[in-house]
Length: 217
Image 1 (cartoon, one colour):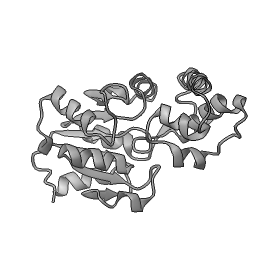
Image 2: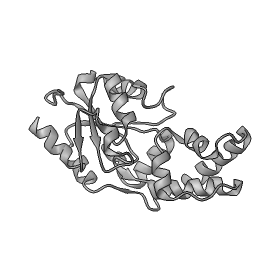
Image 3: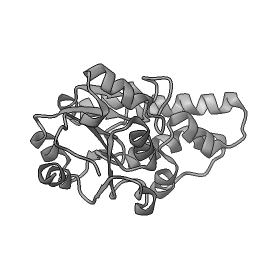
């Protein structure tokens, strides 16, 4: 079982973990794909599709359409979404107070959202000040569930895996964490069903439970 005694770094996923971005992503997707004859997605549809990065998201929706159409839709998505990142997106309950209470720890974001979009969203929600490192899907050659971004964050901060924990809402976060040798904490309120999180070292239902978890360890 994991040990928090040597903990120095807490790595967070972004969408579905720190922020609920489902409405803004849905709006941007609909702006991107409806001109090509695709029916609008509901928020629940988006939640079931996100997690593997933007290019894969467009592919899932548009299927076997030719590459130029998918590229055009991708461009439309990025253009719209970058201007509407925080129309409806907000931190989940307890996130801000938890980040403030974790002041003595180093903190990193590892998202499968592109780095510039992740940074811009964190800036708009006034969360960027909490983080030492922000990595997106395009920051390293492989994205989660690969351990590569976690290893990159550890390398940047000069820390060993045993001194880190990753907190996320997806089996991708758990797989990446396990492969990188860091402790894994899953949150149940995000974009994935609880049963997909069963391999995590710890499972919490609210972000502020992370404080209890670390303090009681």
